[in-house]
Length: 489
Image 1 (cartoon, rainbow, N blue to C red):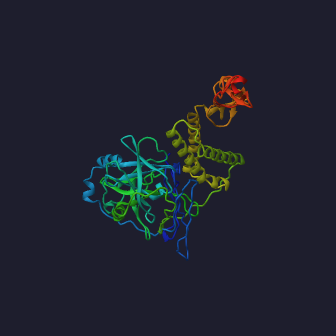
Image 2: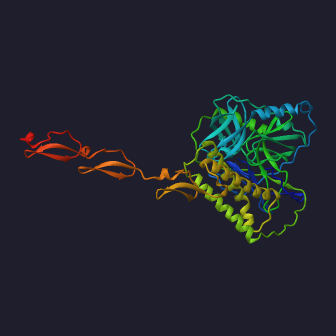
C-alpha cells in the first residue's frame, strides 16, 4: 500500500528539531512494518538548548530497532546538470538495478537489499536485527544468507551469499543534479512477487553529525523498502533507509524520504567486508542508531484540528488488537500446520498487523487525527486479517471464514469442537474405542486403549512347572516343564 503524507508548513528560519524517522522493514514489515521492523525520530524544537534527545517509537515486533535524536542542517549545494549524467541511460540503469536487488526475508519480517559484488549484499542493519535466519531467492531458489558484518552508527549491514550474485553499479551520489529523477526499488509492504519501483526527485543532501549523509527525496519509501537501492539514470546512488512522517507538534510531513548516499556507503563498505566473517545468529545486541541533524523550516505551522472517535469505533479497533494477539498467541506457539511456506507467510502477516495497530491505536485512543496514510493502514489491517484467516484454514485443511472449529473424538463420536486445530477424525468409526489383549494373572482379558497384544488366549498367560512334586500353573511367560503330576515325582 503506497503511503501519502499530508504537507507540513514550516517557519523561514533554522531551528533544531527531532524528526521521527520510520525505519522501513517488511518482518515483517506489516504496512508500516508489515514483516518488517520500523523506528521513529521525532523533531522537537529547541529554543535555547540545541542538544539531542531520544524519542524512539518501537513497534511491536520481536526485535524492533530504532533511529532517534536530533538532526543537523545541510543546505543542498546548487549545481548544474553534469554532462556525464546527461549521457546515462535511465532505462538500462533501472533494468540492471531491478536484477541486482534481492528480497531479504528473515524469521521476523522482510526488507530489501542489493548486491555489492558477486558474494556480498548491502542492506540496512535494522532489516536483520534480532533475526535467527536470513534468506533470499536467486533464480526462484531459496538461498540462505549469512550476516557478514554491520555498522550500528550507519545502519548498514553486509550479508554473504555462497551463490554468485548479479551485482549493482554504484554511481557518484555527489554528481546528482538538483531535481534529478531517482527511483526506489524494493518490496514495500509485501514480500510476495517481484520488486516494485517508485519515482521521485533528488531534493538535497542531509548531513548527520557523526553519521551518514542522506539523500532527501519524495520517492515513496514504505516498510519493506529498507536496504534497497535508490537509483538514478547512472546507477545506484543510495540505500533506502527511512522517511520522516511526523514532527513533535504532530503535523505530518510529506515527500520526505531518506537514503544513505552511495559515496558514504563506498567509504565504509570496503572495511566492513574486509573485517567481516560469518556470524552466528541471532546477535543479541546490534546497537541503536542515532542521527543528529538540523532542519530548516520554511513556512508557518498550520493550526491543529481536533478529532474525536466514537466509542464504538474505539471498541472495534480494541477488538482488532485482541484478535491480532490471539493470532500471535496460537500461531507462534504451535507445530500444527500442513505447509511450512504458508506458515511463514502467515507469521509475516501477523507481524505486519501488529505493526499497523501499534502505529494507529495510540492516536485513536487519544482522539488524535489520522493521516490518509494511517487510515489506509487501518484498511490494510482488515485486508491482512482476511488473508490471515484464509491462510489459517489452508494450514489446517478447513474453511475458517465461517468461524473457527475442528473435528475431534469426544465420547467415541467425531464432533465439531470450537477453536483452531487440525481435524482428528472424519467419521465416528475413527472414534471407536481402541483395545488390545493383555494378561491379568492367568487370564487373557480385553484392555481399552493403545497397546500391543500380549495374548490371544488364556494359554498365553501362564506356563506349567513342577512345585512340591505337583505340576502347577504359573502366571507369566515361560517354558512348560510338565503337564501331569507324575512328571514331577
